[in-house]
Structures are given as C-alpha cells and as structure tokens.
Length: 112
Image (cartoon, rainbow, N blue to C red; front, side, top):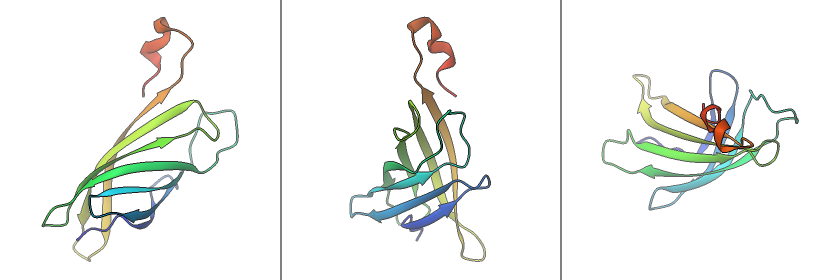
C-alpha cells in the first residue's frame, strides 16, 4: 500500500514532506519548490490535502500549497501513487498555479 507519509522529491528538485495521513485520508505537511518566478527568495510553505484510501494501495490524492511565505499565489496538485516493480513508490501528479492579478481583464493570464 502506498504511504504518502514522509519526504518526496520531484525531477526539478522540489521537495514535499507529508507529516501524517489520518484514518480519513487527510494530511498536511510542507512544500519547498525549487522553481519560482517570484521576486522574493523561495521559502518552505504549508500544504493540506486528502488521499482516497482503497484496497489496492495505488491511491489518488490532491493537495493545495499556499505560497504565502514568498508569493501571491496558490497551487493545487492532483495525482496517483503507484508502486513500481521494485517496490518503490512513485507519485504522478498534475498541477495548476493561480497567481494574483490586479484586475478582472487580467484574469486570462492568472492560471498556469
């Protein structure tokens, strides 16, 4: 069964730490991104999420990162945990990033 608890690192060097996953699948932790277009120095930011618990262990999950420590943006991630042939756990995710814009006409460029 895939356990989200612990440290994870992606191909770009961003790191996530999931503290605990409760019996309902809710979790929290911290995220450190290795990439940013913000002008301020990158800092670790909080994350909160939920995991769909199932029998085969290859769960789906989602979490939100509030980049409040250095940016006016929020990101959401969704993904699935897979267990490889060698027993290693791999998270495959997709994400959306919402940046603050100054006006409604600028809304078109706010989400990546």
